Length: 166
Image 1 (cartoon, rainbow, N blue to C red):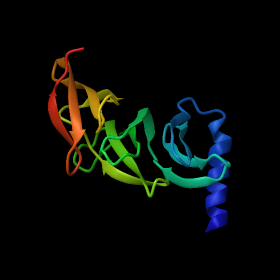
Image 2: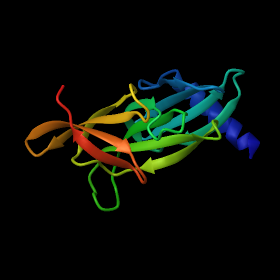
Image 3: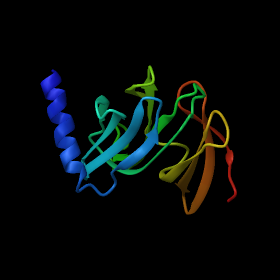
Image 4: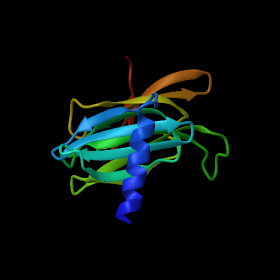
């Protein structure tokens, strides 16, 4: 099992040198969280210790369009928010989706919410880190208009709070 994990991490890091959307998401008490977007169908989130050891790996198996971080659930640790492009069981066209990952025990990458969409189809998003918990500000395509909406994590997944003027 350790050899298999080592091979996955090694291959992912080798591919990272030619990835376009790869980069550091955030720093943690244990190291740094990076995303590696190898091609249109494979991305991986890695939590790498300051020593260079890999603490956790989470393969996304989807192309990504954006990523950010923030303490969106108020537990004192940053959550990793990744925009992926995928189909869902009930919506068979590829579209922008939102995945939120937590750092379990401060180290292990685990899903917090693997959503299909917010109020309307997502164009992009950003994390507003000026409060705890942080807020998700999304840009959404609602019919013929584009709106910006604010969400907070409350219970299961993001809950709509208000529309935002920017």
